[in-house]
Image (cartoon, rainbow, N blue to C red; front, top):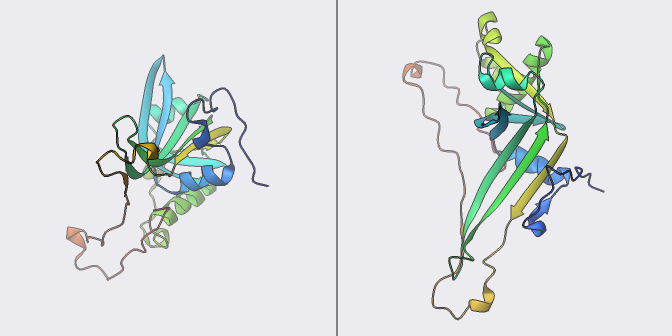
Length: 216
């Protein structure tokens, strides 16, 4: 039986209940489908939403930024966060503006981030992150300097509760099929392009990165 996150006051879906998912399989799949998340938090009543790259290990989300950034300093002080990931999968073109929609996968995760302070764990998580970006590339890179380590703040958040919403369906206005306009779904797909070498890299050994696949 698939495990599920608890339905709390902050995570319970109240609109579009048939699209709600709380099972870990769906939540994790959406988190792993992208490398871009948005981190939401509030400072003195002012909301902030910061886009950044993320990765997951088990039930923990990781992301990093400048150790001097407001986000890292605020969240490492024990303040809660909401991390979201969204994927747009298609335009749902219905026979009316009211019924027009999009197909999508989205998830909201809640928890209290902490700063990763153990150096060995920091290195291990950085390698996991780069394995997502370009598998096998981390051992080839120049090692991080002491100053670069001090300048990088890595956060980890245990997912306390989470909720996903998914729409993957055609227009829901079949009863209006006699209206003379095309209706259906226009799929949207993200894809990786061929690598573009850096201007200073022409003389470097031919060593193209292995491109990731994510959930695209």
